[in-house]
Image 1 (tube, rainbow, N blue to C red):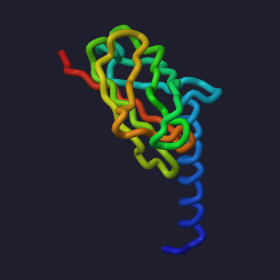
Image 2: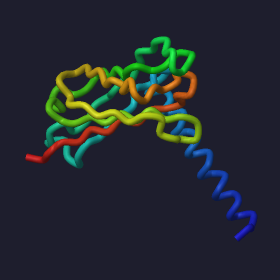
Image 3: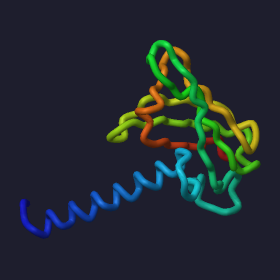
Length: 137
């Protein structure tokens, strides 16, 4: 399966993945549009969609001997998402998960703390994933 057509398909797929990675990085606080999140399949469902912006709190961490991410700050959450769980994964190069934190949405802005027992170097954060989940009525 080492044909020219197979290599072309693989190249197109890699370009698509790279474009997705750039979109995810823009959600991590870089310039660009916020990440679009769709929860559920109907506009009538609770917490159906939101534009979520992600920013970070950063502070010096002696364990890392450098700056670490202490929290992810989510804003622009739909008010209908209150009471839902939100899981934030900080990702490093190659999509490796550096930390995963979960909290309950309490408003349109949420601060999700990185546990002090698992510090994350700010220079290693390359992307973020945000997942909203809740019980269906």
